[in-house]
Structure formats: structure tokens, C-alpha cells
Length: 381
Image (cartoon, rainbow, N blue to C red):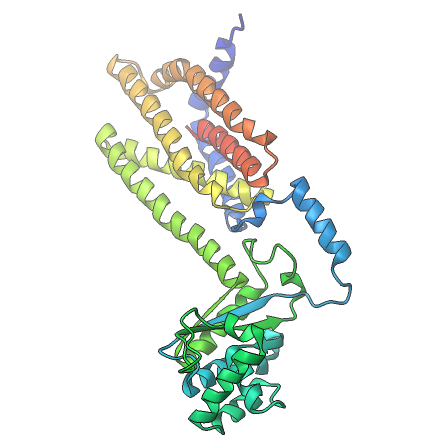
């Protein structure tokens, strides 16, 4: 049987004999990890679950071999328009105006545009190839000519009806919704992973497109890979902004009831926050992005930390009530709880470490961060 008492005695002697050194060391480590907190990035979407997966690697190889060498990178922005009649003159002019303004801005790298309004305009003027020319064609036509052009577009262009809602009425030349597409020459946005990752080169483009649509007016909404990526990242940030403060508040209230002592309460809260800083700092220094899966880690560490804190503080109080001094009470507390804490930490780390065998990177990262966070929590408490 292993005699662990000498090791515990060494820890006791160091902690009780050099409390100032221990505090300074922990503050320095906290400062080091605090530098890494600012480097933590977010990773959202579904692409993170396909990285390093054999099937995804095979698909990437197929795309690399069979995609035209000099083809455009792809990436598109969808303009979803709703109105009483999106085939009316004002509605079509708004759609074309949005597409023209996007086309005029070099930073948006517009390669081509398409919409039901553009098809109708080319029925009126076959030479109208740009949104600006198409606007002029619609502005110069009468209402009767526009309705006739809508019917002609439905007859001659099979894509026309696909751009309109199912309530399209050919007789009255009306529909309640339509979609316009703006294609971008953004190589990084092409391929099957567009819109699946937590960041997309289309995000700033589509944010600018949304501003243009708002300025033009009408019910035109921007959608695409960049919007999806932005929403995924916002979900992570919003969840953290709600979960962590709520958990800290509830834990603070619970500790206040359990400790009934301001000093012990502050000590417990500071220790919990320190464990979080260490863990997030480790993620930043190790280059592990914060994903949806890792949202569960902060509450998990808070839950484990509060258990450690309550056991340690209550044991220390019991020793003090027995008449022992501060150093002796700390030493006896360590003797009582250190082995139990070590066993709990070890078994928990082994449990989370089992995630390392997963083929999915986010699951492996969850195992690493959770295991390291538990070790940090043990070290702090």
C-alpha cells in the first residue's frame, strides 16, 4: 500500500509555511493565463464536426480534383423579398436597386446577379444586362407591358417560376415573395464548407448588403453563409453572456447561505473565477477555439469548484472549533480532504479524457478542456 502521508505533509508545510509565496505564485499564474483569455476565438457551425473525418477528407479531395482550376470561388448572397406583389414596378425596382448598389461596390466582389425582376426586364429590353439597365427598362414600361413581360417570362424561362413563391398568379402577374441571388468572386467562400464554419469571408459582405437593403427600403432580407456564420457566433456569445453570470450569481447566493461569512464568500468566489480564468487562458494559449460544445465547461467547473470549496471551508471551520490554531487547522484540513479531492479529480479527468478517442475534433477538445479545467480547479482549491 502506498504511503501518501509524506507527500501530504510536504504540501502542508509549504502552504502553511509560505502563504505569501503561494499567493504570489497563484496570482502570477493567473496573470499569465489572463493574457491567453484575450486570444480565445469562437468556432461555430457544422464544419468543426467534419474536420479530420475520413469521409470529409475524401469529399475535399474529390472537390479539389474535379473543381475547375480557374473557376470562381463561389459564394452567394440571397435577397429574400416579401410584398403584396413582388412583381409590381416598385417592388422590382427595389430588388434591382439593391443588386445595383452591391454591384457598384468593389469590396463586395459581385460576379453576377439574378432575380425575377431581371428576367422581366430582359423581356422588355433584351439588351438590359446590368441591374441599372434593367431598372431603366422597367421604369420606361407601362403597367400593361410589365404584366405582359411577366407572362412571357413565365412561358420562356423555366427558372422564372422557381424564383417566386408558390402563390404566383400568372393571370394577375403577382406573387407575394421572391428571391434574388448575387454571386461573389470570393475563393475562400467556395466549396462544400461554405457557411459551415464559425467564420466566413462572406460575413462582412452580407452585413454590408443588409445595410444596403435597409437603406433601399421594402421588405428585403439578406441571407447566406456569412449570415449563418455570424448567427452561430452570436449564439455562443449570447449563451455565455447569460449562462456564466447566472451561474455565478446563483452560486454566490448559495455560498452566502452556506458560509454566512463575507471573507469565506469572497474567497470562494475569487477561487471559482480564478479557475475559469486559468481554463479560458489555457484555451487561448493552446489555440483551442470556443465552440458550442464547450459552453458546458464553465458551469461544470463552477459546480465542481463549489463542492471543493464547501468541503474545504467546512472542514477548516470544524478544526478551528476543536481549538486548533490556523496553521494546524489548515494542516489537518489538508490531511482530510486532499486525498479525496485527488481521487475525485483523477476519476473525473479519466472520464472526460475518454473523449480523446473520438474522431470529432470538438468532442476531443471538450475532453481536453474539461479535464484540464478540473485539474486547475483542484489546484486552486
